[in-house]
Length: 169
View 1 (cartoon, helix red, strand yellow):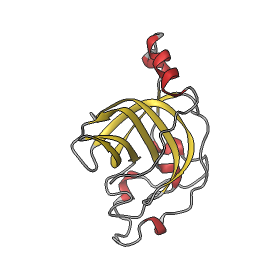
View 2: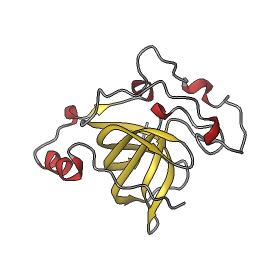
View 3: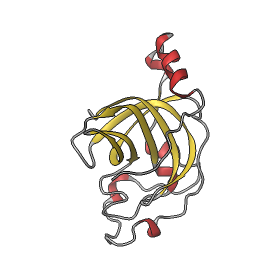
């Protein structure tokens, strides 16, 4: 599906990210995040064990999105690494250049979307040649809060990807 989502360059943007990498970005300079890290303290988080138990209804999924309890700004402008599943939004050739990163399979498509603070809009200059819808990936890049609206859901975060690789446990 093709969307008209503008490419966003967060904080330092792509040029700044390249500069950081060229200047010796080390593994300890990358914050490893988990989905619960994106929810403000004291707010509800849907644990992975019960995410698949949400009611399935193929119609009007976006209208069933729970209200977000807000976003966290702790990692704005930082390089982070986060794993999740792809919902493609934009393509270049056969590769994905913009996608929603979601915490569990089926989010936004087969079950109502999670709150905006559990969705990340990822953009990448180098198209990711994945295995299709719901490919499990790990994304590393510049992170920040960014309120974005798509046909599928409201999104609370954005990540300008330097690296998108298949997930490995």
